[in-house]
Length: 201
Image (cartoon, rainbow, N blue to C red; front, side, top):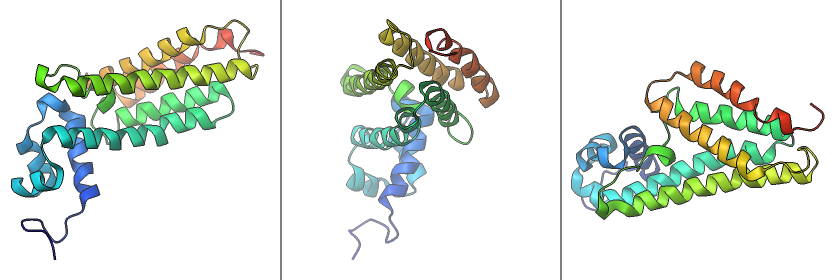
């Protein structure tokens, strides 16, 4: 028997995907519970019963989005043997996430930049995820250095900072209206920065 007030066909994962799209498009502060209720297609009491308040729902959808990043751009970054190809494919997957059928931009990069003081926890959480993303880039460059793909003495911290800043910038440019084609073209220029420190190029 379904809990009181909850539709028999309630699909929690599908409801979370719908909520994610709202937060992805509008950000935390720009999203209201009315927006979420409308997107999920349930009555407000059922939404609160299933997910708690807006803060709890945001944290849950951010973790779902994080899984998409881990299985997309970060997976190809770590699983592709050649560091150049890994970076190229990872940047392209970021572009696909930031554009196309998805809302423009990135939930982790821009979902909670300016929040009211009582919601600072979301700002801090996303800052932590962004720092983790940059650390993953550095670890990949460190691996390439150890494996002899990069010239000795390459500053892997600077490389990670540069490419993470580039990814962050692409997310903001997507929000401002840059097209998939424009973002892909910009990745070709960004990849040129890696070539001087690649061995055998």
